Image (cartoon, rainbow, N blue to C red; front, top):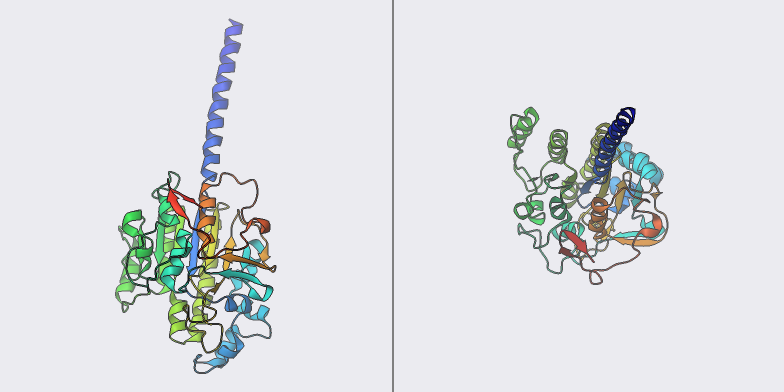
Length: 382
């Protein structure tokens, strides 16, 4: 009888052990599907990221309504002082805990691979991993190429957990909203209220504003954060657009103000992510832009294949899978199209054995012709 009791006791212990193992395995599997936020600021130059406000442009009364006030806000004797004033989150957090690439003063280059150097081809390259061969001059025409968001949405770990909020009203066509089955809120499109007080308020504010093709970035951010708090998606595309709008208008002061606002919102979003158990220590930010701008003082406000500097961009990354290398100051060339590759690595990576973006693991070169990425079985294959 005693032997039977002992045997039953062992069986009981084995069952308890099996249950614990199942719970631990389920927890580990959850951690193997990290959250990825792709965050963009339209047409924001690398010169301001790494050098802060341009002193020559800052003192130009044709570009700045109040040069004295703007100088107090963003001026300084050195690039380091100016960039810390303009983008404090970039330089106090990302530069210490993540990576910043694209300071061409160190021959650290990030380029667009597409020929056109405008928004539609830029976002298409960024999100599909291949520069387009055909020009779309920012028209509301559906892209033929699935994006990494669409691919993620067809994976079991991410199905129904992918969302996009954008200021620019053309991005739903690049993201293939209907085909991808991804919720996309862009331009002054109403948010889904569902008796949500914040959603109702956002729609009320939007309805009181003149409808343009680019929504106020603050509204885009508030709508996105409200969705995050309620639904906890695992993949987010957040696209801001007002920097490009003000640059085209020649308003350098407002261009800087919107960049500074973007930095503040980015800090607020990171704080929220680190405060929410669902996102904490399991979320990577990939921050970049769709194109550069003219590098000369006369051409800073415009861009395109005909404007020198339009293909020169930057990127920033922050999260548990990113080596904290800070500002990269060695010679190398990376590409906008690599964003898509990085996202697929992140969403397919189990608990990583090493940091994904170590300095020696990054691609050193690339061009519009040397690489094509095709979709097969929900994966990007070189």
